[in-house]
Length: 529
Image (cartoon, rainbow, N blue to C red; front, side, top):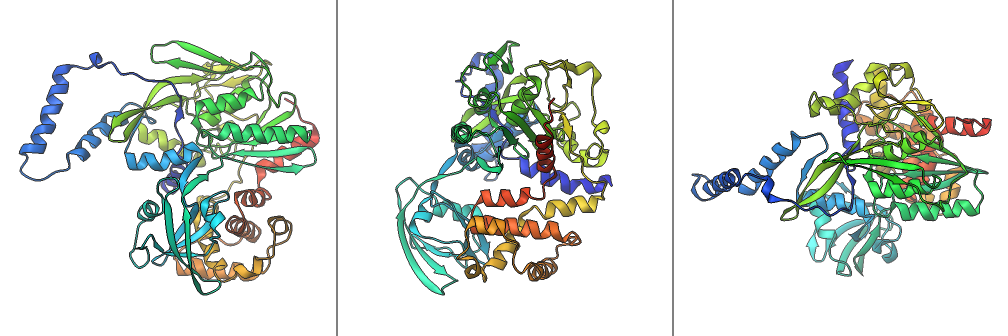
């Protein structure tokens, strides 16, 4: 069974790639006296020799970048060297907005095809629709060129208010259309919310971006007015982000002078962050959902809620990252994200997993949890007795490897093939299939609102299942299709995503969610810690 873990590790690792930074906005000044001038001179001489004297033409910038990467990767798993190109993509996501036209797309054959038009973006205002083919952008032909996604992005993005002319083919009407509009800011929301029961709200935080606290503040204010009594905060699959965003959000839930988080600098100095008065949600019941991909800033939030006995943590053991990075410029737009501090939960525990056996074993450990038994049985979660701490109310909690939930949600004892099946059905496979299916069916949904789509069963579900079987066969995809209800729910969710928005997708996916069902059961029973 161990040999099958590599696919899981890949899936899980990719899902976490964009967010392990818990950034801080502190200034950082380097002191060159720390470095040996002799060694720096040798390095500079080597680069000059390679550039000017080596027999073949070589990419010196690449050699320098690789050398820096080799140094950084031997420090800890979360320090990293990031090129300017990579940084631009990550930065957009963490800023909470980007400048562009505001669409997501797929390459269908050799053509750029719009999958979603982002609410609040320029394309939405201009009237571009899902399913539109972008043929030409500013006289630059995009079809029949086998362009990579990054090439397409570079042609569609640009400076704010810069003009773009698009030639569009709208398949639904078999017509060619011309659009001219200005590029602009496109919001990337990190918070999804909806009222799930009469007195209960659900809030999902996808990442801790620069705009996340503002989104949360507005959302909490809305539910405060509606006199919500119970709040389900979903941090599953949230890889983290900015520490300041997590701190400000916790300030809304914790009473004055409660410890939010403790940080320890490289000099060994510890600083505690305390809650201030005036939070919006101090008395309401709080239920926090976590899993193995809840990392970093997500763990700061979960740890503070747990240690202060402020709410109930539901789910599975979190990732286990207790290191803080700062982003430092390297010139030419490249940066390093360097671990500069550790953080501790209010009870004083570090939840950082050990990486003494190397980075590969460290990352593999997340996938290994699927085969160690801890996903099925809470007693299989490794506990280090010497790292026992106490919450404010005297409950035992442990450090050394993530946040262990108060209420454990096991997965069924099924085979590794079934695990793979589950991840495939929550992956882009169904997203791509749904686009193919909708491409000739959009008119059927034109008169349906998101709410109507949510409340009604998926029409022609048997036909869709048959088409999905054919799609999998034609694309050499092996998927177990026995769980028909699960597959239909997944397909319906992705149809909701492409027709409407991520909120519609989330509401549909949550209908078959064990974590959420358990939280609602606890709310109904009046469960308390």
